Length: 269
Ligand SMILES: [Fe+2]
Image (cartoon, rainbow, N blue to C red; front, side, top):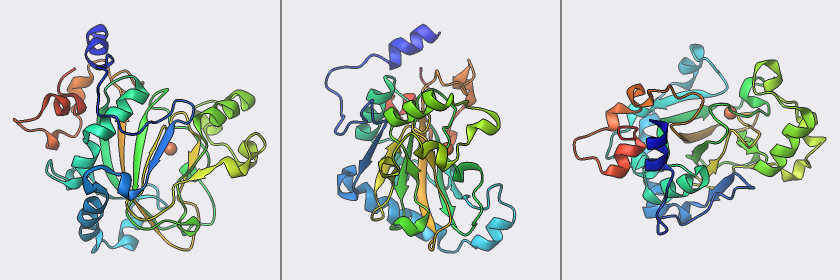
């Protein structure tokens, strides 16, 4: 079964749609709004803003699992003809992700996250860590508002420097040791080498959260709003052996899906 999946997903034709590269040693790529294909940066902002305008953030915070990172819109808030899905399924994005993962990915989640950036005490994902769904993955982050250093930006260390940190500190992906204090990171990597996802609304970051140490939503003067979506391969640790039964983002399925979409949504192997 896995052999068939590899044959279907992990062998590429020479001419694909890749227009930018997530370099192996870097583990990330950042696109300015004008580099995002088909004017989708502005289209996504225009789509998301009206949906979040009337959300009562204070009310939302009362029941939130992470009060510093609120999941204000879910995947089901975006239909198959939404700009958000057009972006997440865009051949140029998906093919660049495929090249990096060496496998055609499955789109496993979509959400809009709101960070109030109020809390002074850092906890959870506000500290440096790696995500452990797999050895490699790609998380996409599109800024919905303009983000500068006062907005608790998503901050990360390139894959090659993160590798050095993992080796030097004997990093473990579980338990309390999953989080690393800043001092631990900056004793190995220069603070100037940490990258922050900042810029005008519509800026798109694609980051391997399994290879690049990262944190976000720290205290700031202004809130931050980000669209996020995730690509995993069928071979990820978190995927069950019968991954096609797991049924990702089923509301985006339709009768007339292309073969690319059928793969992306995990309908076909
Ligand atoms: Fe994370």
